[in-house]
Image 1: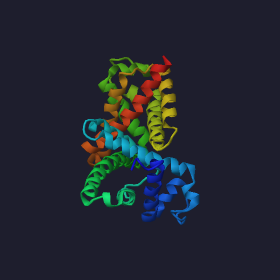
Image 2: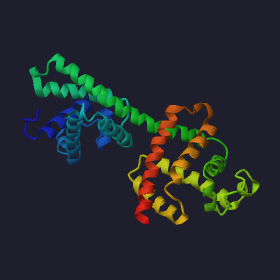
Image 3: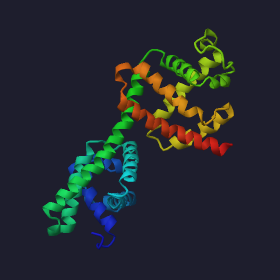
Image 4: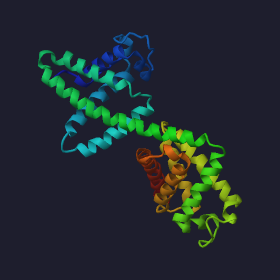
Length: 288
């Protein structure tokens, strides 16, 4: 296929043309009307479309080259791609259509060279690649769905925020100093729980987390995490507090979600929290 002039654009265009015919609603991902002819000149001359079509072939080429010795790294890349595709509005149900379109593209370009054995091999490889991406997409969605359940509880900001910071204080008494409390003060004391500063900040943290989760699918996420990281330097927050805060967050979620909390959901939250906290810590390092 590489022998074809400008093969990435050619192959990518054929691939997406087949996809659009099988699943017209995917045209909307490119800003095209659902009823637009999949083979129209307007579509095939659209620079954003041809660029993405070429990128798809490049991505597939890189993935194939990484099979085997770089399988672990490939897995990480596919997980990241899954999350990015979810943010672009790609749905899980599109993947089987893309798989069919991929086989038809190969058949069209290779003709008799595309034997049943080769077709079977492609089906196997595509199933493995797409499964990793879909799992990543579902992971992010499970976090957002569980957060929505927590938000449905009465006074969730005050309740969850108070529970989270009390858990943090139990796990790391030193963090009490950030609120002006002595390290040896009883974490469950009325003085702490009814402190205006404690109540305001614990509620603010939940609001901040809610905002961050609402931006998971936004391109502005990195910039906002950078801003929060820089702000926390001024509060006296240190990098070593982040893993402990993560544990306190997971404990709070478990207590509030009860039967809905499980190891898979915990792993999903750990992945997202790791992403958010690493961005904040990177900003904190640059701020110092």
